[in-house]
Length: 437
Ligand SMILES: [Zn+2]
View 1 (cartoon, helix red, strand yellow):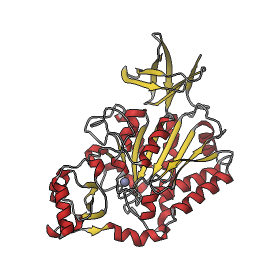
View 2: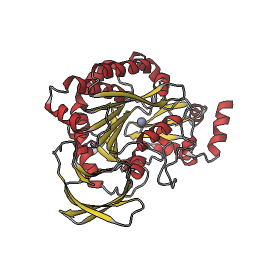
View 3: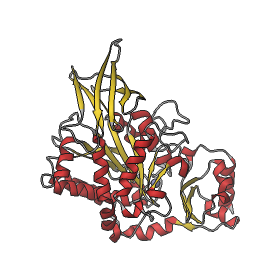
View 4: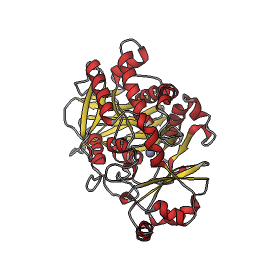
């Protein structure tokens, strides 16, 4: 009774979503989120993965007691996680696998820790490229998985992808061409503490995918006051020029495209739908989804997410990102992981290649920053807005067509316009860049 009382008090006060403590992880069967609407409206709980089978409900201690009192049926996901996740590697074992791959393929792989988790575990990122020790001007791509610690399938699949790239480089022409002309960054585990604790949140009971700057409530992308794992990813993103990315979750099977935080149409709506559909088409179970036509969904149409990584990466970093849900169970039996890899392998490779569907400018002088106005001239005349760039390079993933990029350097009144063409299924040597002096 005491716990229930504590929860009710919290539910009555309006709590910012970013501060919701996730100590209880429940699944409510049935398609009826209205039964907890009262709770959702207070901002004291988080809902996720609403499907016809039910939805997940996260909140602080006392949530289950609260539902008991209201006679609402639920399953305790943490208790289920404990059993099944016992078969999975620990985060220390994942670290070892990544170190082994970096040691085995040093010519194309370099492993870096971008910082430490709340509990001091390394947040590893594998860079994969030819001339891996050099920062070349090539289109930059990234995958990040398992910021929800219990959504574990993506961690396993991204490690498998790293290992396959290592084995196939120099033997398989598709993989070799991709690695030679792209800078690929893969982070299998953004929340190692959560994965080891077999829980969604990080070690501070915080949902990392509700903790990023959000365009609907933040005017700037400031790391202040955010969880340490989010701060490290923000700094990492800030140091690079990612143009295309995906982040992996579990709980259903679908490719989710922006926006998540508002109902407006994304400026690259047709392209991001095509890319999501491209991912789904190569994954038979996703493509044939009964729940989501074609295996894709707009984020906000599904349910609103505030403070997610996906919208933040495009709004502040010109990095077009989708969110891929890989498995109905967040914790499928470990023996099923090779099957999930088979289902997703072609999609994973396809999506990385699509970073070449864009164009860029590189400037011979180092350290130049400024802005680029992007305008399509054919097949239609269309404005794609203005984007900041730095480190003398700019690159943007775009729909096929002809474009004018008008570049203005910082502290300069003069602009320079260049014409570029974007074509699909074309990997240019080191990327499609126009070089300027
Ligand atoms: Zn998730």
